[in-house]
Length: 181
Image (cartoon, rainbow, N blue to C red; front, side, top):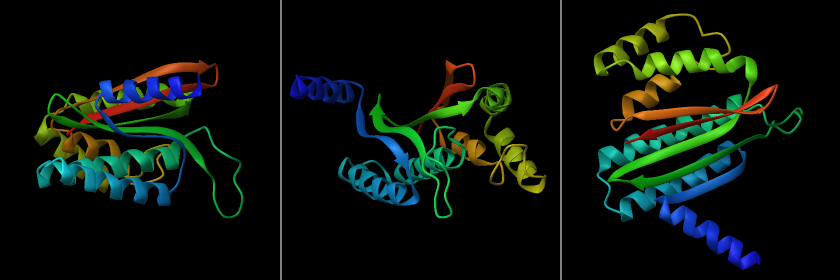
């Protein structure tokens, strides 16, 4: 049964164009290791350099979002706090995609949804203006960076991006963002 289940999982991944899948605690070391393998795979698949570079940038931003914001974590100690997330990288209809998911707090859903809907509604020029405005402004509420991560993803996601939330329990939601390069 073990082998049959793993084979079904492998087939699911292949049927959905998934080249890389990681589910677990994310660290900078994990980011670098998977990133290195991802770059090599995209080179082997003859993905053009510009697309490969954009895919890598989106991948880094997605994993950093999990590392910074996942509500599912091992207790913090003085050295590190491990954050749990799910990452997939693949190809679909000639486009590279990067999808990441993690648990977030329920009270963050509305703010995040509004922000992402605003970002998705903008064209290239609007995204650039928002990016500049955000860099010049104060750090957004709840942000642990400059607040430009999702804007950067949208700017690189030439094939668009989609997101979704599903309730885990009254305190938590599972958030997923998928960007097409």
